[in-house]
Image (tube, rainbow, N blue to C red; front, side):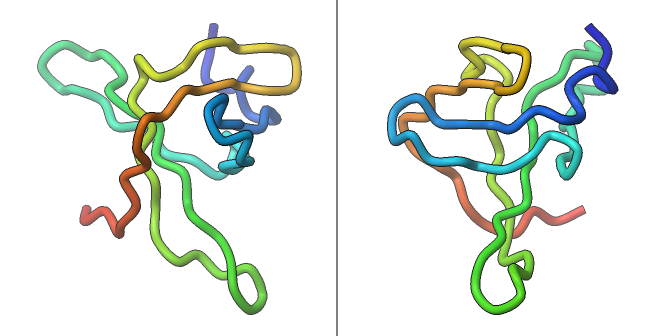
Length: 85
């Protein structure tokens, strides 16, 4: 599957039922040595005018199902924060 095929899908946490964001707003963390995807990084929006307040990193192995409209993940703990580039 190509990343472009995931573009319109929404990410939902199976544990809490929380909508985490849309894939088209995300970035990928890739291990340069292996070329494997380590995590999806979604912006955390909220507050006035839905401004970005930080990011949440979703480990690739937390993905349980990729459906037609949703990507379901199972997060035991959310790692919020601002990721530095």
